Amino acid sequence: MHRFKYVFLFCSALIALSCLAILSTTAEAAPYKAPPAKTTPLPAITSVTSTLFGITAFSPTSIWAVGTSMHVPEFTGQPLIEHWDGTSWQIVPGPTAPQDKFNSLIGVTAIANDNVWAVGFSMNATQAIGQPLIEHWDGSTWQIVPNPIALKSGNLSAITASAPDDIWAVGSTSSTAGTSSEPLILHWNGSIWQVVPGASTIGNSSLLSVSAVNSHDIWAVGSSSDAKKSKILLEHWNGTSWQSVPGLASGMNFDELSSITTLSDHDIWVAGNSFSQPLQVHPLIEHW
Image 1 (spheres, rainbow, N blue to C red):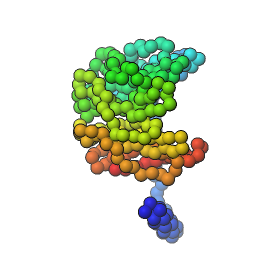
Image 2 (image 1 turned 180 degrees about the vertical axis):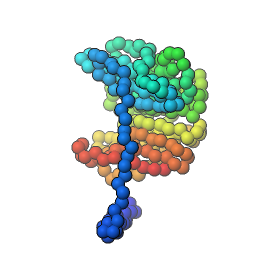
Image 3 (image 1 turned 135 degrees about the horizontal axis):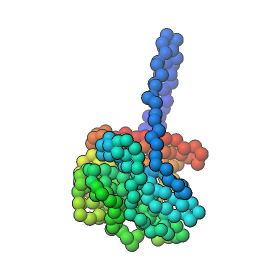
């Protein structure tokens, strides 16, 4: 069926191109003109290598971005947090993570001006063993919030919220040797973070992005792989449990979904990449 579909689409494309060739003799389509992009100056950071991974907006005058400031020779780093007040970006001090570790924030979500959450990891640079890192802004300061898997290694890649007492964070947790991984899903109920079992997966699996439609309609995406092949991973929370949802395969050896956005329960977009050769990576977009 898939082969027939691809043949049908290919033939349709040839017919469409033929029609366009004929029509082009009488009319030309106006090219799309994108509005000019603007670069917003950021505060200077000296003596370190810095990058930003996640951004969220509560309002036009309250936007947060998170990442890491890394000291290259020692391979250590501290989380980087910046805030836009409508006029300029400013670095906001965060809690000091362990100095002998590489610490980074990857995802961030803003529920209110005094309720912002960020997630990432804190990794031992010598042993390459990470722990999930969760930080919270209460309107005055950023504070580290204990995570519920202190005895296991892992990381958090993304966070979303449908309400102040309904927040989800996703990532992966690894074995001590780092030879295998499985999805990690955490939930904040307004008081504590708890581990929530995800759908059953095979091989090395991780979740990279999460988005909420409402409290009983949450989506998370990532990949599940072995030594020879990787396939997309789609999981859905129905208010009771997480379940695996089939996705479309690109036909290549490696597929991965790295981002998701939800407009409604019937309008969801996911993006990632697919490839068969390391230097031949192609964009991948799917719609629900």
